[in-house]
Every structure is written in structure tokens, then in C-alpha cells.
Length: 166
Picture 1: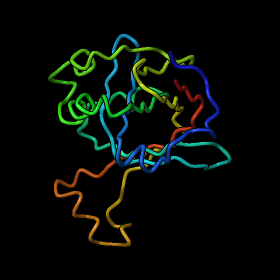
Picture 2: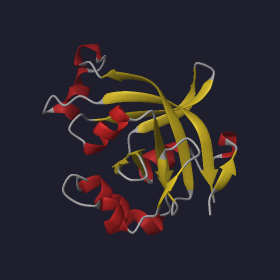
Picture 3: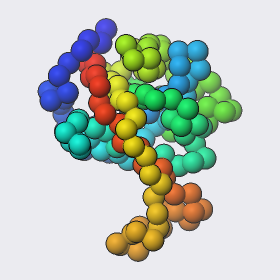
């Protein structure tokens, strides 16, 4: 069972949690939500708020849910869930009930954002800002190699309004 925790007590290192262990980005409602695995993102402080920064390509199904909802969650799991996270990162929710396939239990935060009971850490976020990546702004032109289809990410910044941990 998850309970409220202070965001300043999150362990281990966030670079490891996002880049190595991955996270699920989830948005929608209890009745209809979608999730995707991400290994790009960040946590920090901006505008005197604790924030999470996400990067979502426009063709991802989760993008539609982020656009339509004011909140989203980031769920972090232990190594036991690597197979499920791989599935959520390789298949679209348009073609498969990923949440059902993984056996995840959808819970709803106090602010109406869906998350998974099986997670060891959940960050509930309220959207504050978004902006599309502009290739003209790359200081290192080699970064454009990540966009062979010109499908530039949309960056979302969300205020972390609640942290839940086991």
C-alpha cells in the first residue's frame, strides 16, 4: 500500500530511477487511461516548485491523454517489473490493453490522476507548461539524430503535487 511521503526524501538517485530503471508516464481517468515507459525526463525545482519534466513524441497514444488532462503520474517500479515496463514501452495502448496485460491495478490520486498500486514510488503531477522541441535551437547539431522522422518531442513540465511511496 502506498502512502504520502515528502518529495525531498526520494531515494535512490533520480538519474538512476529515470534513465536506468525507467518509469511509467500515465494520464487519463480511472475509466480510461494510458501509460508508456520512459527513460527520458527529469526532476528538479522551477518557479519555486518541485517539478518533473517529460518528453513525449506526438504519435504516442499517451500524448493524447496528456493533452486532454491536467494531471499525470510517474510510477517507478522495482526490477521485478522489468518485463511489464518493456511491454509498456514497446506496444501501443491503441492496439493492446497494456495495463490489463501487465496485471496492474489502477488507483486514482486525490487529484484524479491514475497510477498503479504495484509501484514503489508515484509522483502525482499537475501540468504547468508545455513546449515543442525546436530543431533550430539545438546547440549540438548531432542531437537531431534522435529525430530521423522529424517527430520532435513535446516537453511537459508538471508540478509534483503529491509523492506516494511504499
